[in-house]
Length: 438
Image (cartoon, rainbow, N blue to C red; front, side):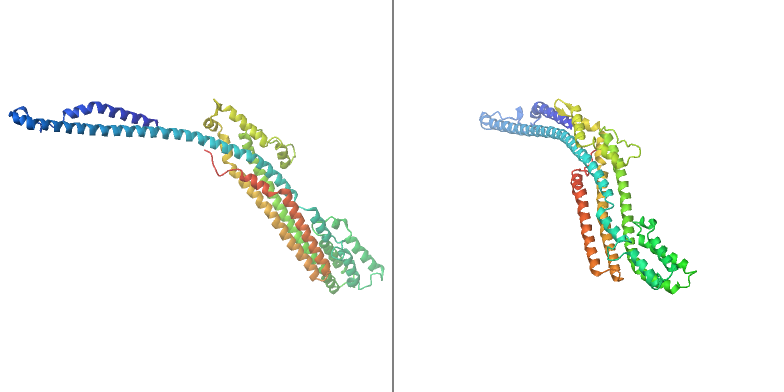
């Protein structure tokens, strides 16, 4: 742009010189063919006074008009050139000024983004920990454990008692106390039911394990006991399966829910590791030491300690110090600041990955509620099956379904209040990651 100004000034000087030099030459070089020569002028006095003098005046006027016209044209060109030169100078100044504004804007955007990112790291880590801790709900656990407990009468019956009753009525045909052999069978049945092994099987539904062990016991017993035949065992198994099918459906619901929670937790652990890796580069760009994990310490705990020092306040102090370093004559040299701190530019440009991680967390957060909904429907189906099989009272089943619905809603409300996903969303929106800085 500077060359344009020099070129314009050079042309201006040329035209000014042309005004002084060319004009006299043009006057002398005018066509004189129409001016009478001396020997062609009439010597008649009357002619010289009446004809020759007016012709000279006319030619002089034409020459003056031509000269004025040429001067006007040159003056107009000079004025135009001056105007163009001023416009070029203004354009150059504007571009230079625009460059300063652009660098300042870049810096302000980068600063705002990285400060917001500092808080986003903290929020994302805290909410990952909260969601991982919500893989179970105390109230729901108590409710499901009660339904799963073979000693519980949550649905109006105790599975342990029902098995003993079926042994007495179906297997022993109502003759449980007729002889010592039958009494021994009852005692063995009760011993199997009360085994500590089955009481420890909370998540795998103890009734299923009890039913399998009882059937194995009677099939073995039937080999040497002629009173226990296949028909009797089939009848016993059929009656016991009315209860077992309910526990099987409940067990499948529990197992699928637990598997879903475990997968969700694995994904959260992976997300937390990715966030940690992303954090390392941002921390180095801000001239901060990386997080240091103690032996055997979980990543979430390490990050919780790290965020005591890596926070919005320390990030703002870093930029204040940086601005003072590049302040000259009361003005910040944004161009030099950006040029000499390329890692900050790159940290800003990688914030799109951090935004993607917050989106991933939101997906896992929503998946948790999908798991709860599915689990709720499957447990209700198990309760309905108990009603269909005639082993539970209708009013009792309806009561438990309503209780379970309330516990589910309470668990969801507690989760939403604890994690507050909107807080993370709003803070992430403050990061203008779409604007790359080069």
